[in-house]
Length: 129
Image (cartoon, rainbow, N blue to C red; front, side):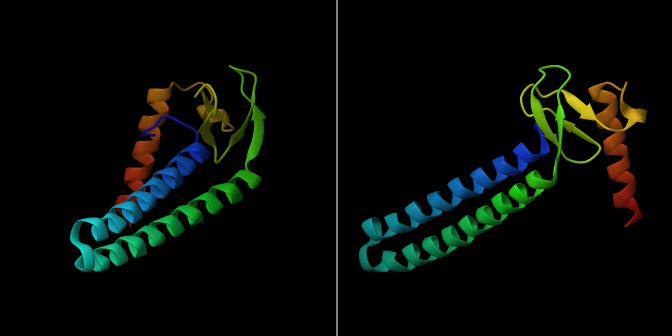
């Protein structure tokens, strides 16, 4: 895991980044009218369309994260004692970033060992394709 955060929070972060990128494209596209006058209308149109597509992608990611959140398992974190949601067999606490698992084989594994196991599993599945 690159960001060391809960999976649902990572999806929401990507949705927020796409929202900001879409808004930025729309603003920069509209600024084309200010800088180039009539010729800038083409730049504004392109910026607005690309920004709209990016914002729709953000909407899709937020919708997907919401649907995943409704079906996620709610557990109590052993470290901070707060209710958190978990996707898959292993995830991180949304609050204290503690690695949580439902797999008894991975329950006593350190974070580095777990990430090494996941990386090995991911590399073996990509080589089989």
